[in-house]
Amino acid sequence: MALGLPSVLPGSQPSIGDLIRKTGPTFSFEFFPPKTADGERLLWQAIRELEPLRPSFVSITYGAGGSTRDTTVAVTERIATETTLLPMAHLTAVNHSVAELRNVIGRLAAAGVRNVLAVRGDPPGNPMGEWVRHPEGVLYAEDLVRLVKQAGDFSIGVAAFPYKHPRSPDVASDTGYFVRKCRAGADFAITQMFFDADDYLRLRDRVAAAGCDTPIVAGVMPVTRMATIERSEQLSGAPFPAALAARFERVADDPEAVRRLGIEQCSEMCRRLIDEGVPGIHFITLNRSTATREVWQNLDVGARV
Ligand SMILES: Cc1cc2nc3c(=O)[nH]c(=O)nc-3n(C[C@H](O)[C@H](O)[C@H](O)COP(=O)(O)OP(=O)(O)OC[C@H]3O[C@@H](n4cnc5c(N)ncnc54)[C@H](O)[C@@H]3O)c2cc1C
Image (cartoon, rainbow, N blue to C red; front, top):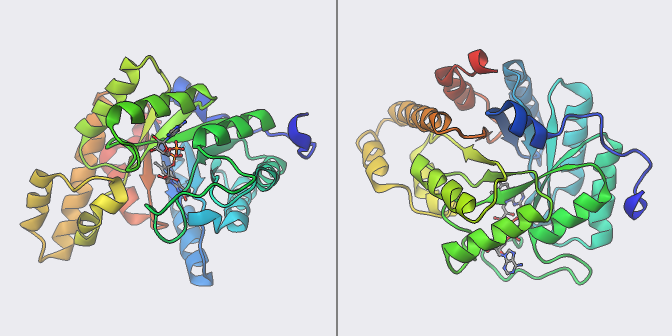
């Protein structure tokens, strides 16, 4: 066995890469690990409310700066053992030595978790601050993909950026590095959130033009408050599309109308993505279930899966 990991290797759970390629479009939900008892209650309420929708899989993020190692593993493990959902753990390289990363991968394997989203992570505090490699760690997501791949039969996802990663000098080099991490062993990718289907389609076209057929799942989050629009650049890497912002501005004084428009706009965008053959849609839930359920109903996903 590779890397001296525990004797339990993943295998019993379906591979998300296979699900996407064979049964797509997949529909999936993203949660974050809670920091407080109240947060934990909200998370489990959302999980229980979303479970009956029978998503293809759910994912649990890894806190900024590697801060939630234990909670991410614990929540992923609990989802695997106490629910009918297929969980995927996010794993980041920031602030971890290779030995620590192997330890986390081993714990996930021991819990029977077979699916991992390998991302580099941002520096704690300022996401655009200097990225300092742990002296015994890895430098890029590409290296993390290799590490997980060597550790066993994992299905590995990576991050994709419709507006290019903010650190990339240009779209061409961003595409080149994305293709490298796919070739290092990624089975699929999930995008940063975006608000215009054309931005996703442009990313898909340039990756295909570079000769890479790794399926790229669309990461989406409905706008439910004007604050999401104001934080768009931080959340998505680009300013909110101007024409769409104007639609929201017209109802900005009415929080319920903003919410309704957000659900409608996200549903419209998802319909277009499905028509364009998207391999999957990944909903960022922020540990709440209502908005996701409303978009889900508009898309009539129950009839599709
Ligand atoms: C779907 C999704 C889920 C995420 N989940 C989390 C999470 O759970 N926790 C968290 O902390 N963060 C998460 N992130 C954020 C992510 O960690 C950051 O955006 C991070 O800055 C980039 O991660 P990456 O895996 O794309 O890095 P990389 O692929 O390593 O890229 C980082 C930068 O380096 C460049 N680059 C890559 N390879 C090379 C190379 N060989 N030579 C030179 N330059 C190179 C890239 O073009 C890019 O500019 C997520 C992002 C997405 C899209």
